[in-house]
Image (tube, rainbow, N blue to C red):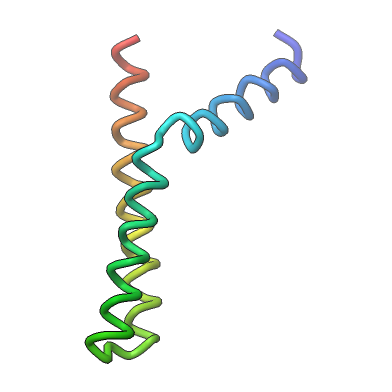
Amino acid sequence: MSEESRFRQALDELVHLFVDDGNLAAFAIVLILIVLGAVKLMNVPPLWGAIAVGLGVLAILTESLTRAAKGAKRR
């Protein structure tokens, strides 16, 4: 297998991790809306909101990658 085809395959896998999982985007949008509501309506400091979004996105991404890895093992 040539180096170019390996690179293309790795790039395709990376793209599929983010494009194929529609839940990833949906969960991120819901997280942002919840944090936005907390910051605007409950007077949560914006810094805490930013930290919550950062940690939430990391958790969502970790869950998505774990699910994708389990799916790859089954193939």
